[in-house]
Length: 481
Ligand code: ADP
Ligand code: ASP
Ligand code: MG
Image (cartoon, rainbow, N blue to C red; front, side, top):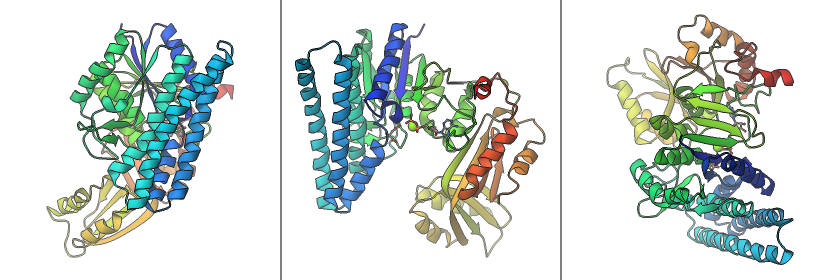
């Protein structure tokens, strides 16, 4: 049996000393059960956001405000370390030893944050934030959390060892969204991680960050720690990849939007990837690719409720009598309407349009065409005026932001009649801007105003999940409420 399990803990699962202690207990429970974990951790909750704002503020020349942010982060990490030491040693060690350990932990935290402050001072002096420096700054979140958590695990009795993820996760140099180099990663994992496993140790590494072959720090994109977990799982041929988060698993809708959302007990790779791409934040879109390639099951679990069964993502979808498994929403989108004023759509026209998006490296989410016009949706971003200017050489262009894409996902859409009618009946009160079904056989999506999104999700949820299939959805949780 393959006993290797990658356990990834997200920001809320390591947000403070209490959460980290809970994480240590979960890992210790797995070790006691004969499993060999490799732990991947995110930065403590909200730290990445704060580091991004510190970098932007510094680059605008406001050194004092940037350093005030890192000062708060420094204190937060030191406080967590102090509490963890106290908690682990409460009964076992004399106070003198606690003091000694605390001095050690605080010394490296001070050194890390001194290094970060140096970069921010440099940024304030130069007044320019390059993507390369931005990656360097945000990596401090995972650098600090992973080291602190590895040390805490040791104090809680685990044979843990800290691994600098940048030695293993080799990427190209596309800062902010670096592309992992699978073959090199596998080689590095065998060099830096596998020997520890052979010695029965628990490697702990930060997610999200990597480095180029030349050793320059990179990151994998927001939410990228899930991706790290899958890269590690794929690289060492793990038996399972566990994504530990703050909800009971993948739910039928974002529970923050739809409080009666149900846990989906099992979902296919294809469905989960579609949901992730279309905004279900619970998984990073690219996460599961390395797992799919090697057919490694992925479990999504709740670190605040570890007994819960979570969601199991597998290669094939289980049979389900409901057409959909879940509803995702992607906000902050812009619709561009491109109308060919001079000519009907001729061959080569669409290519010319897409070449513009390609040149600006701007991915397109949804497309619909008529005889003379093309509408498409893109993430709202600051390249749009330049894109519109280029497109206006080909056609008339209008664009409008604050749109949301609602995406209903399920393998059972194919072959069931009348589903579209039920979908559109449920959202009859909102103004639909674009509709798509067919690009993928497992999703049905439409664009609406951002302000209508939450109500639309709740209406669709009431329509499609009022009589859920108990084989697939956690129906008991609903009856307990
Ligand atoms: P982590 O910090 O553990 O990586 P994230 O905040 O990235 O966690 O993802 C978990 C959050 O994803 C949940 O708190 C929930 O609000 C949100 N979410 C969005 N859609 C879904 C969904 N379909 N199922 C579960 N959670 C979802
Ligand atoms: N800390 C990073 C982020 O907030 C990566 C992650 O949490 O997955 O985006
Ligand atoms: Mg996440």
